[in-house]
Image 1: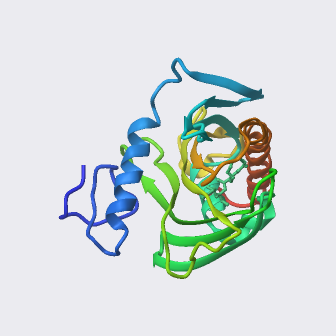
Image 2: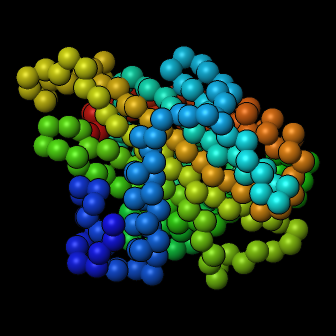
Image 3: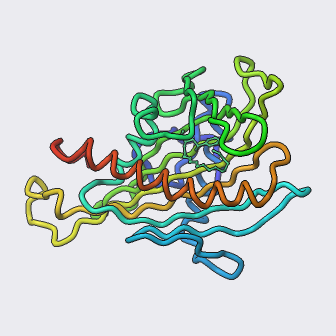
Length: 253
Ligand code: H15
């Protein structure tokens, strides 16, 4: 629910709403709350398990809109040795992006709305037999405390928005996306003292959801096979990158 009174703060309780600080604050709040509502939804009829590897499960629902493939995608994964904060930090922060992204030609911040909300313009690699895609989206990172005892949930949402610094220029086609990465941290066999928690005691339960509209016609079979190959590839590469980056660093809770 959205009300005007409260202030966006991190961490918050997930129901706290927004003090209209910037022009997209309501948009951000609405989309964040939508993801938080649906993240716990069970996989039901219509979802196909298209890839499984270790703890990673990739599900997809085949959906077309006016002949364009817009398949929703959902990935569940569990990674030992990192926190949700660490996973979200490396996903959100543009400084690391080109080290793990293999599907981009470039990424650029075109506006900072708040320290936790920025607008990106990205040029995607031409990965299928169609025009090159670009994207312009706000990207928001947030920490939500559920209770005193539990570790907070961390999430990042990327959501398409128009921007005067990123006009759509032919021959490029704009992707339309609503993507969320939602992470919970589990502490296995917690030691009495929080300082004694080691990387071997922690685990991140991750949900990645993507609604991506290619913005124009792309051959269905080609798009589906690229998606089936590239999403698991992205998550494997990204999570090993985070493991590598954090291995010898203090745990970021
Ligand atoms: O989520 C991923 N990357 C982030 C950070 O770069 C951006 C992403 C986004 C995509 C499109 C528009 C806006 C934002 O959230 C990892 C994406 C992995 C993509 C794997 C490639 C699948 C190819 C078929 C689907 C078409 C979409 C292309 C991205």
